[in-house]
Structures are given as C-alpha cells and as structure tokens.
Amino acid sequence: MINERKAVRAILFNNNKEVAVMNVAENNYHKIPGGGVEDGEDLQMALIREIKEEAGATARVITELGRIIEKRTKYSFKQESFCFIAEALTISVPEFTDDEKKAGFSISWMPLEKAINLFEKERPEEYSAKFMHFRDLCFLMEAKKSDKFV
Figure 1 (cartoon, rainbow, N blue to C red):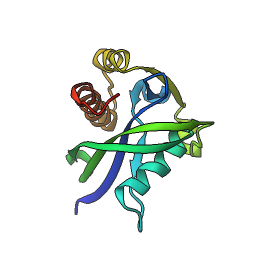
Figure 2: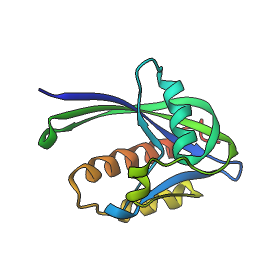
Figure 3: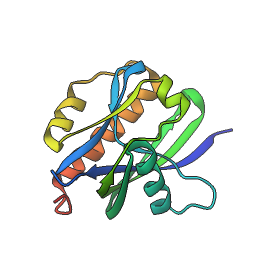
Figure 4: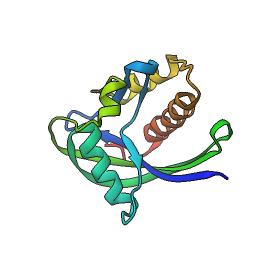
C-alpha cells in the first residue's frame, strides 16, 4: 500500500526581498518552509500555518508557483507538494516541533540567488533529504523566473 500525502511549500520573502531558507543540521541540507496539509485545511490555510511554525512569520500568499509529485518507492510513499510565493508580514520566532529541534532546524534569510547557489552546491546523502532538496531547488529556480517575485 502506498502512503499518500499533500503538502505545501513557500518561497517566502521578507521586506528586504530575502527568502526564508531552513537548515537541517542533522542531515546537512537546506529546505524551504512547508509541511503536510492537515485534515480540514485547504492549501492556503496549511501554508499560512506552516509558515508560522517553521519561519515564525505571518504571511500573505501572493500566488501558486507550481507542484511536484514525489514518489519515494523505498518507503512506498507519494507526496504531492504545492508551492506558493508568499510575503512575510511579521517575523518572530519559529515554532519548531521537538523532532525538528532534534534534527537541528534553523531559519535564515538570504537573497534568492544566494539560496539557489547554496542548494546547487549541496549533495544530501539521506534518501528522503535527496527528494526534498531537489524539489525545493526546483521551486527556487521557478521563483527566479516568476514575475510575481517582487
């Protein structure tokens, strides 16, 4: 049986036009904010919640950027990730879960081009991290082409 999940991701920018990038120290890679859609949530509700939890920000959704379907056959897992461009309205402290804290999650803000360069240089080794890293690099590169990224 294949476990399926819907998730949301954000190319989240602040008033300095920097994007939020999360470091996952335990597996030595970066990702963009986002996570699973919970029961009763639509995509934008889930995105706003995930941005608050992982970036410590309240946000305004600008536009949908695209979606990627990941098929992680090793774990019989399929994830459909929807990515949005969003603007941080206020920024505070992230609300990482205990597992995220244990994995060494931290957030930083950087220019989009710097984020893309960082992702291009990384080579995660952990199976799931490879999927997340490639997915998020694709979303960052797509944001660079978007006229909605202001």
